[in-house]
Image (tube, rainbow, N blue to C red):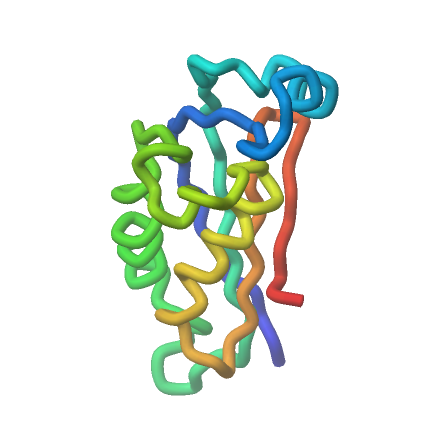
Length: 136
């Protein structure tokens, strides 16, 4: 029997959506207010879900304390109160759209979670705008 265990987290971060190789006019046309040269911020909400078989010894799919610590270490400590464009190496050349952020988060967590477990990350950029990545 496969069960999904989820952990919510959050971080606050600034970013700017733009392409260095485009003109300001083209960036404005595509990214609008998100192309503000002085950046803008979001209160990101994160849901990390791990799916797998229940361990008969522990009764866990994954210890939620371990998952919580992993999210804190790998995501919150590295993204919270940061400028994603300037402070997070993964976005030095990658536009920090919600879509790209969720893939970066998934990749940072995937390496620390047993391969037998499925991983899904949901990232809310606003209460009404969110993205989901399952690694496919």
